Image (tube, rainbow over all chains, first blue to last red; front, side, top):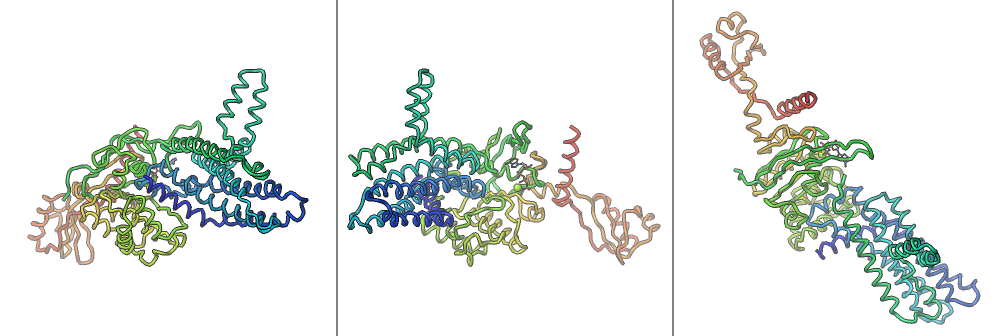
Length: 258
Length: 320
Ligand SMILES: Nc1ncnc2c1ncn2[C@@H]1O[C@H](COP(=O)(O)OP(=O)(O)OP(=O)(O)O)[C@@H](O)[C@H]1O
Ligand SMILES: [Mg+2]
């Protein structure tokens, strides 16, 4: 089972890294991140803010674009192009297919996120910090990466039952809402109606809380207090992704292919 | 020599596809039952839209039936790896990952089938040369022609040396040479003890290759049987060729209705309705001083049988 998942993942990885559009997005992202080098000249004083506001934000945004762009096509491309017919006629379970595809894309995103973080790191290293290596960039990027993996799982969930365009809309909506769930909860708690309070708590629990992966500010302002936040985020990711993937497998299990 | 043990049996398979939100679903398969026995070559025939591909998809769990049961190797089809490992499948117009080369694709298939690296390498070069793709091993599939894809489809189906090979229109899109090669491959599979189930529109290929055929029309089975039984059961007439040409009055005098024959150059061609008549006519013709040049029972080809069954079932379908 593991071997088959890994074969599919390796093939998906190969598929995505042979995707020219991905390279175009990545090249543009690296260019924008590289440009922060000149931004430091313009801003007054606090370089840490530049990392937080521009560099990491670029990594975040471009990462989301890549995850959504590749994620929505992950499964639907195989179904539309009928390449899935041969794969599933082999001794491969549909769940293994879903897990393998998601794993393969996660590896690609790991590399692209690392590349972007590395460029930002170099910009930072080359500038006036006098060669201080800002490890915080990688720590914050780890959070971004976890979020991207979760978005990939969501995108591939949607792509098992709807068109790429709708999948993209759903995933991006969840991305936006996922960063605002805290406010949803706070607003809900202020309501006098119990139903609304419980409704908002339920939604808060159901929707992905993407702020769990956001420690850009902590990193920018003097580093993380403790690494337990990473552990908590990783656990949250594992649990949430597992649920989403299982739901995908369930929806995919008895689908007829045209 | 065929064994009686069914390797694939289909019982009461039915399938409908939804056509729209509120419209009635279309029936694609209605209560289809048939079987394929060990070491047979079975042809699956039917006009466009008869439901052949749908049936084959159900066999490979790419679609699920509304009712009915498929039994493979005597046990129920499960997602189980053991059953899948023993089946080779080539879809109709196979599609591949265009970013891979033929060799890379076969390697992926081998990995998914749990083959060892050395086994995979030797099998894939053997098969690529068998299907005439040795030269295209390292060419991106994006650059393959239609026929090359078809050949690669066959290679991937046979890679893991399956016991049961299911092919959806293996000859379509191939040149005459390619068709001959595929016929050879199918015969070799049988000789190696494998079972082959394939759909086709090319009746001459089916007639030449298959032990048995299953004919489908509008999702219903209209015929199933051994090729020679389907063909042999129905002799159209016996064709006698004699020389010289006798005039009509001498034919009538010999007890042969003149309208049963026509002159073809220096030869007289006669159509006797059955063996008894043919023998009586031959005796009379010999007495008249004629020479019998040939005497051939004319049987229905698969094509005539196919047209007839499909025609009949259309008629009964509209009557009921
Ligand atoms: N995914 C689908 N959705 C709706 N209808 C479908 C679908 N797939 C097949 N059909 C219908 O089912 C019927 C049978 O199709 P199928 O592909 O099984 O025919 P076939 O016998 O393989 O034909 P051909 O010889 O043209 O390949 C057709 O009428 C087709 O329109
Ligand atoms: Mg078909």
